[in-house]
Amino acid sequence: MEKSDRTYVAIDLKSFYASVECNERGLDPLNTNLVVADQSRTSKTICLAVSPALKSFGIPGRPRLFEVEQAVKKINRKRTIDAGYRMKGKSYYLSQLNKDPSLLLDYIVATPRMSLYMNYSQEIVETYMKYVSSYFPIYLFPYYYLQNVYFHLLKI
Image (cartoon, rainbow, N blue to C red):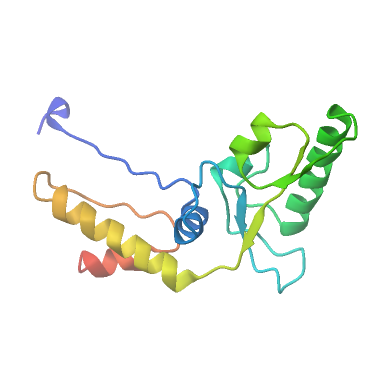
């Protein structure tokens, strides 16, 4: 097969766990500030995911929970000063925060639910296999924790 005859498809599930948690709540992950972390542990716990909306404030994808807390405090200090110390409330919606500088940045902490993420991943792979694999010979290259779902579906 010549190089020009090949077709490649890449699916990047942006902040997958955070996107699942937003979807389960009827929220848009591109507009909702959310982290997936187990708050019952210490604030040193690692966040498994950060929504794209919260990442837009400079918060990285896998911080510790205390780092999110510190970053949000810093962001809110700046917002408070910029708004002349007249804050009206808070919001975890990016669109509201962008429109109204007198709102403090807030975020949702979602407790991890690994079996839920496995189910979503399996549905995605099954859909992919149903519509894409019938047209192209494919290989799936999993690169995160849910690889056993792929291996099971591909009977590897």
